[in-house]
Image (tube, rainbow, N blue to C red; front, side, top):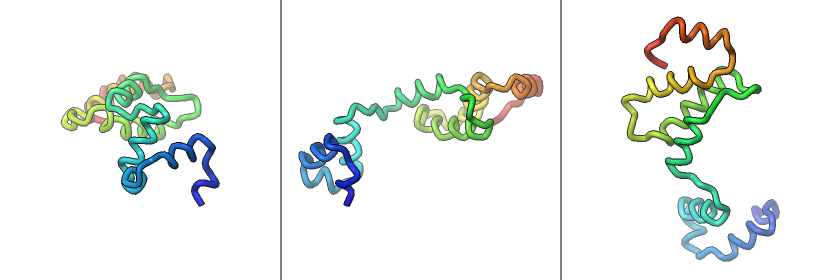
Length: 111
């Protein structure tokens, strides 16, 4: 059933996989990432976290949630400093000037 929803390149890749690669989810996922050039490394998440800014269509909550999801992937070893890192990146990337002014003026010490 799945093969009817895939393009030709994906069908070719799955056909070429060894049985044990196709049966193990993690192996299948890493093989597909490698074949299609998807970088799923800590370095990639670090860059994404550092460069993440609130987009025009992001609510404040959506922006904050995205940062919260990216942080453990970008900096898994910094769990103790997570709150401060989140707050700093949130302040740097938020769009709304009035909200930014209010946050910076209140000088919060946690996220």
